[in-house]
Every structure is written in structure tokens, then in C-alpha cells.
Image (cartoon, rainbow, N blue to C red; front, side, top):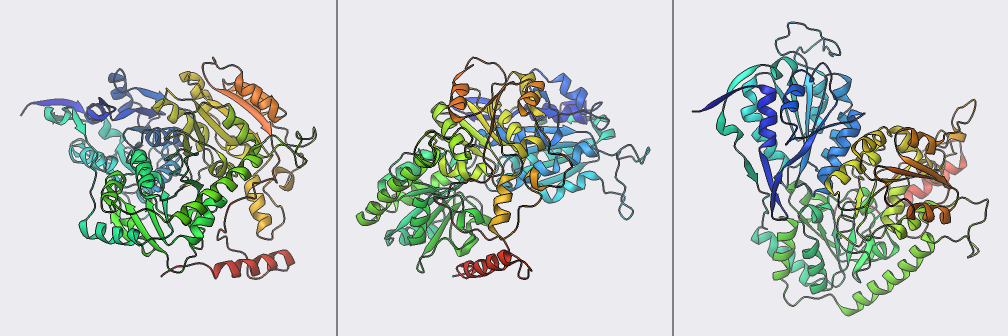
Length: 623
């Protein structure tokens, strides 16, 4: 057997560089690169190894470990899980900074390879700088924090262990059902130790994504349910994108006359103006989608885990006779909500199920109701997005625009195939209802974990994955302040991003939720937080200091003008606009279960609890 004597770190990066994937008819590396912030736990071993392969496995330097992992996650999501990136840190705080990002990848079922440095396996210098010592368990390090948020976890204490660990890692990263983050904790002494590795271990490997076909019994039951449906509806989730099933979804809906609703992850799977697209579903849903959901008798959920925002905390689907079919590659998700499971790849499942229903089409009266509701919603959405005040004139000079009006302006100015990126605060709800995407993948929201700070870093990952498309990051001042350092990374890489910062001077979304549950405004908006003096934050100057071409505008008209200017800018640009923290789009939406105190001295809280109790009675936990 022919062998190569390499350090563990050299062998690891050589293996990563040999992993290939076929996309758009071309073989490309599965790993688009490695994000690295070096320290004493990885600079000598893995850092030296990455230097040797930088021509075909590029290394990117970031400014924050959590942020660089967000960029890697966004890259994988924008690549429909066909490609991924790795992230390496030193031990200690560098590693634990990535734990939040690992949770983001875990919740969203996205591939992410984490390579944090770890303590010395030989324990000679223990305790080393940044080492966490467990008084009860000498094998514990900071990297054990990754265990609950990793789909596969291993600690490499011998150089030969990567011969089994890396293939297992790749199996998880490319599995349609088990996909998620992988953590390989790399002991810093082991990174530098040499071993005679089989040369065959580094042979180029072309990875293929399996497409499980449905079980015949499950398929028969699902087809029988749909064949009897009088008011059927489809819920399109992120699995539609990951399966590259947008065409199959559209064809299924058109052949059988079944309207489509979209989750946050599924939005843009169907063009916004398709006559069967009801729009977003649930708490942040359109009136068209939610009204149909209340009446639907058969719901076909495709590639979604049906979290509480989608189901109105299990109170949205009100038809007593309603039945649910869960088409999902993961049996874990397919079994939720007492559904009829249909475990399969989304594209294979839709195509096979359609073949079982050659004569079926929704009743005409249901399609008439769908069409009328879509028309009514589009009118309401256009009113919310318009640059007009309550009196049908332009906004008064002293009035601040709503998030919806900013979204409308940005959407009107964007390319038809632009990708909007967001994650947390009030913007995801407004974007879910009001952003109009014409091309698949045009809507990139991290709303599984809804992680503040994802936005700008996520925009970098999206742009690296899709350099051919315009990328627009929309971010509130709260998320911006949590993580903005990657503007400097975008500038350093020359990535053209448009970053729209909406400044409502605090956490406006949670302030509205606080008031909606009977509370007083407290500790959310800056003016309601403990302070000696309110800060005057110049977001324009701050973004400019990090390398963005930045401007602040004072109206929707000025925003639209700024969006049209400097189309030839290389690197990031930031546009800042003040918005009203109290305005939200009232049209659409449904109830969300947020627990209200049973006992309070305050009347508004007692009233909110009474309303909460009444709403909970509509929840359906079992059928």
C-alpha cells in the first residue's frame, strides 16, 4: 500500500480539497473554502497546512468567529446544500464563539464543518492558556459545548483517527435527512503529529446527493387523501429549494390546481405573482394564505418542519376534518403533527405523487376563492409598501417611514433575480409578507434560529456562493450593533453588497410584542432603557469607517434615489434610514403563543391573559 507521511492537519486539508460535487453539469470542489481566525490552538498546525493548499482550498480571514460561521452557513444555504465551507478557530473563546452559529446550522439543517482547536491530547502542558478545566472530568474541554448543536461530533486525539472521522463527517454533510453541522475538535499537538496515510485516502471523490423515493404504502395513503380533497393546500418549505424542486412544485400545483403557501425557508420557491401563490403562511403570513389555511381539508407540507410561526402555534388549521401529509426526507420531521408521513426527496415525492393523481384537480369554487383572496391581499400589500401616508399623499415631512415602506422601495429598485438577506427583529415578518421574489433563491432568511447578527455575515456567504446575483442585506439597528465587523471583511474581499440599515432606535419588534402582551415599553427601545444620556449613533459614519461607501437618507424618495446611484461600486455600500418603531403591517398574520402572566397587579396584563387563555383553546395538539 502506497502511503504519504503527513501531519494530521496536512492530511485533513488534503482530504477536504479532494471532495468534489457536480453542479450545473460541472465538477467543483464541495468545500468553497475555509474561514480561519488563527490562535495558539490552530495557527502552527492547521494554519501551516492551509497555507500549503491555498491555491485550491482558499482561506478567508474574518473578524469574528460567530460571524465567519454565519457566512459559511449562508454559503451552504445559497448553494442549496450542494456546497459547504469549513471554519477553524483557536481553543477557548474562539471556539465557543462559534457555538451559536452551530445552533443556527443545526436548526436549519445546513452543512457546516467546524474545526476548533483543542487542548493538548498528551496533557503535558496542562492547563494551557484558555483551557477550561472540569473538576470532575479530565476529558472535557470548551469544545464539548458543541455536542448538543452538532449532528456529528468527534475529538481527534490521534492522527490516524481522521481516517474514520472525515468520511463520517462527509456522510453527514451530504445526507438529505441528517444534514447539519459537524464538529471535529482538533487537539493542537495532534495537528502537528505525522502519520503514514494511505495515498488512496486523498483520491478525488465525486459526491452525489441521494433522492429517496417514497414508500409505496405511504404514497398510496397520501394519494388517497388528496384524491378526496375539496380544499387542498400546499405548504412549501426549505426542502423544496434543497431538492431543486421548484419546477416540480410549480408543475404539481398547476396540474392539480392546488394553491401554494410558503414558509420563511420556502419563500421564492414559486414566483410571487404565480396565480396559485397565496404567499407566506402563519404568524407572518398573508391574509390570503391564512384564510385558506383555516378552511383547508388536506394540507400537503413539503420539506418543512412546521414550526410554530408556520402553524400559528398549532391553532391556524381550523377545519375539524383537516388531514396533514408531511413530505420530507427526514422521518423525524415527517412524523410531526400526527401527519400521514411521506418520507422522500421533495422532487421525487412531488413527481411520484402527481403520477398517482392523473385525473385530480381542485374544485372550481375553491380555486375561485383562492383567486379572490390573492387579489385582495395584493391590494393590501401594495398599500403597505407604497410611499404614501394615511391621507393618500406623500409622507409628511415630520413622519418616519415604516419597515414596509422601506421594503417596498428596496424591492422596486432591486434586480428581478436579486437575493434579499435578513434574520431577526421585525423585518423578517414584514419581508415574509411583502417582499416579492420572482426567481428561486431570491429570499434568504435565517428564521429557524432567528439569530441577530447573521445578516451582514450571511450576505457575504450568499455573495460568495452567488456572485452573479445582486445581494441586498436588510438589517435593523439592533442586529447591526450586535455584529457589524464583517463589513470590513466584505470590503477586504471586494464583495459588492448593498446593506440597508433601518434605525428605529432599539428593539422595536420586541417592544411591540411586549406591549401586545399587556406590558409597558421597558428595556427594548433605547429611550425606555436605563440611561443617563441617549446615544446618538451615526451608523453612516460607522459603516464608512469599516470600508463601506455609506450614506444616510431622510425619506423613501431619497432611499430609492440612493439605491439607483453608484451601481458600479466595488465592495459594500450602506444606506441608513430612520424608521418608526411602532408601525407594523396589520393585514395578514395570525395568533402566536407567547405566554402571558396568570397573575399581575396591572390591568392590561390581566386583560392580555384573558385573551391568551381564549386563544389557547383553539390549539390542536392532537387529532
